[in-house]
Length: 448
Image: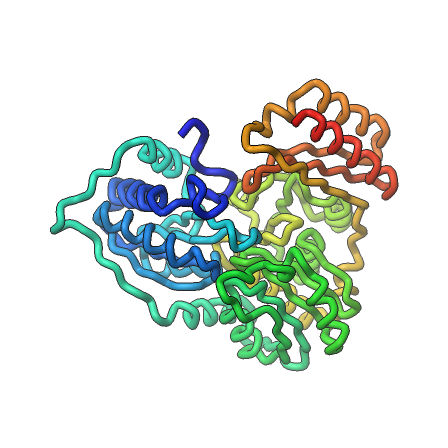
């Protein structure tokens, strides 16, 4: 392979196209098992997936690779990404594997790894796995091969964990909740948890068939959820992506409340209750309105690189507990080890109950600055980082920044999960933001 194997968050791509092929995933499972056994000895590895039809193919391949390295495997079936992180930790497993392409369509799939502590694997372990991907497989002797098992109560264990992240005496009786499961990994756990906590739950997109994951639904397509909230007179709507590690919400009026606003709601409420530890970590993509609103409340705010692993690293370095991305990846380190859509949603509902105020009122303390992002799709031969450094592109960015005259910002970023360059412009004037963003995107496109 001429380029790094891992992207921002594991590997991801079209099924049947390298590296998302059975032979490559077998090799990857062997590499993971070999590295885990080297550092921690022979142990069990948990393997879970979302609801894509290709999950059957890839989990079998991963199982074969891990077994060939001498590692036992426990299959979890369809389960949210953060559930696999949680179970990896509580089952004392050596590692956890997630087979998912998050918010992408069913034609894509991917692999993410968790450490025994329920965190994303370290850069050092990832580098060792990547190095082994350059070497031929060496299957262990037959007497050392791993065995495969299945955890039948995985969903129930995760639901109980999620329920335990809110105060013991609190429930959601009287709350009317609309829920969009994106025909993805949360289709069982999210309705069960909310129902058991007393909410009246109205669910859509909880009938996965292997092909309809994220199809016109979930956190990237909120129209159906907005309609459901208004039709049923719900207090709030909750939407997950395909693997349920992110959440976007809708208030009682059908207005979208994104990840930045949800971070503000949790931070502001916890600050008032004296329970916020330190400050909040956002990313380079976080809306400037979040930074401003937190500053007004004397809540420290810092930006990490885009990607929940970098948010987590910043939180751990500062010993803070709350951070996330505008896309809805929210990390509550006082509750769990990674971004968890259901846990995050439960924390927002908890603040609504505790403060006795609807979501729109809690979110009103933050004013969103106009922000526009255009994704410029790249041909297979293009290298995103090279294009971003071209003189014509740099000139367009400089021109946009000059036009904004200090009242906004321009961010040009290669995606770590898709073959696109993300062009983001933010400022105080909506029309100016749009014209600048389109100009930069046009300049990038002209170089392809």
